[in-house]
Image (cartoon, rainbow, N blue to C red):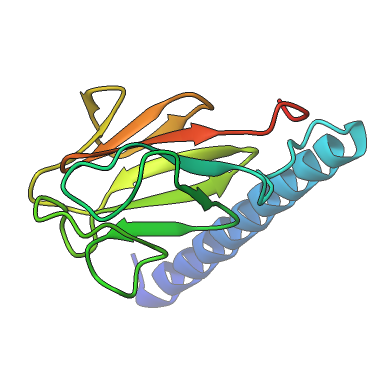
Length: 150
C-alpha cells in the first residue's frame, strides 16, 4: 500500500475517533441535563453533618465533641488536617471524607494502622451513612446528621 494512501486512512481514522469522542461527551452532558431537569440530581451534604467523638482513645478529645463537615475533610495527626487527632496510632494524613452526590465517602490515605468503618477495614472509597462509626487508631467518630434532614 502506498504511503499516501496509508496517511489518508490514518487521518480518516483520527477524524472518526475525534467525532466518536465528541459524541460521547455530548451524550454525557445530555444525560446530566435530563437528570437536572427531572430533579434527580441529589443535593450534596450540607455543613450540618458532623463527626461526633464516641471514643477519644488516647487523644485530648472529649466524648461528645463534634466536628462540623462542610467539604472534603482530612483526618490525621498532622496540624494541617481539618480534624487533628493526637493519637500515636493515627498517621499524619490518615483518612479523607469527601462529599459526593449527597453522601460522604471515606478513604484511607495509606495509613500505617488502617481505617475502619463499623469495624470493617476501609478499602478504596466507601460510603458513610449517618450513624456509622469511623475508627482511626484508638479514636471512634460517628457521622451524625440533624433530624430535620435525611
